[in-house]
Length: 168
Image 1: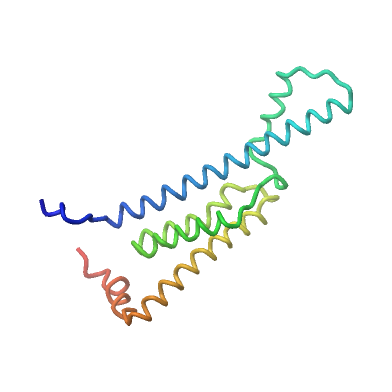
Image 2: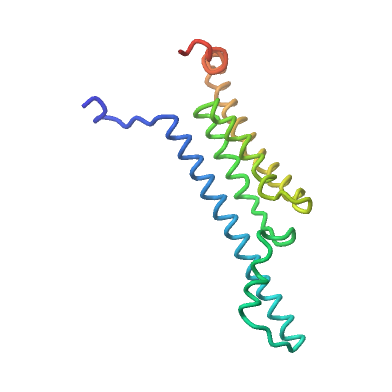
């Protein structure tokens, strides 16, 4: 009966919500890159078959298409807005729950290197990670400006940073 008049939102659920959105975006990006890779391979394969006037069994062509697991370096689509959005969502977890948020932000910056693990894709992984860092830093700067303008920066540091040891 106490909670009927207002909605209480737990910070842990909010962090989980942001993480689930990040995961959804990542899955859609991976799926988009893989679909584009398969489509490009089918087009390349069809063009080479026509040019060489060869009859190729469809089953063999499908097997050849599935040999490469992920997209090649040229075929990875770098959507800058999506990468910055992932950084912003990771930064929002910092704003809601600092200890979990810092971990989530670090993981979101390391993740492009884990997905694009071969040497050809390190440049793209670095670009993705830096765009995410841009999103993280921009939100943290806006949050710091808000704390300064409301004269609550010292209270925030005393409570969220220095006061961690006081919790049981």
